[in-house]
Figure 1: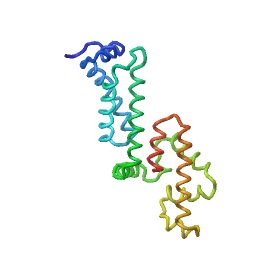
Figure 2: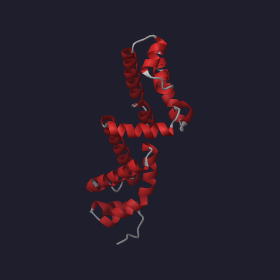
Figure 3: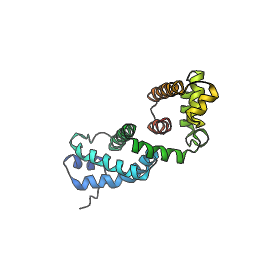
Figure 4: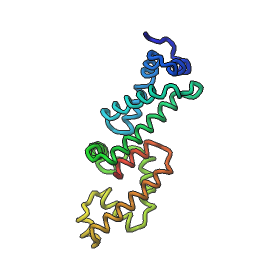
Length: 196
């Protein structure tokens, strides 16, 4: 059965009543656009496709709570953003997934500052780094941007690797805290990938 209406409000009302055809119609209306959005956030078609399924499973499972008077598109994209946050939280605990994401990020950004595709994101990251105390900023740049090893930085600056590690941990924490004030999820995700 295929629903003729493309009226979002009618479809959402039918979805609330567990109408599967309405659910399919909403999926067809939004899945391609949402997939493109998810690919931008996670930089991987495979991960984005999995997240797309998660989003629509959540939509189906919470269908009784959806308000047809509210924008379904906004609701859908908010659920997608929450799924992406959960995905990155999981990545923070899962070394294999983290390695995969870092591989994707580094292949896309061979040099963080030169190749950062979004000027706004680059500016936001730059401001966060500039706000660090001078020594911490210098160490962060050498390790994360110039990609020197802890040993190289240790001999260059005549400080121990444990001191370097301490500076990196504190710098990353400071940048993450700055991220919390940012409203743009794409910026948050891009920077999260780069500072992980």
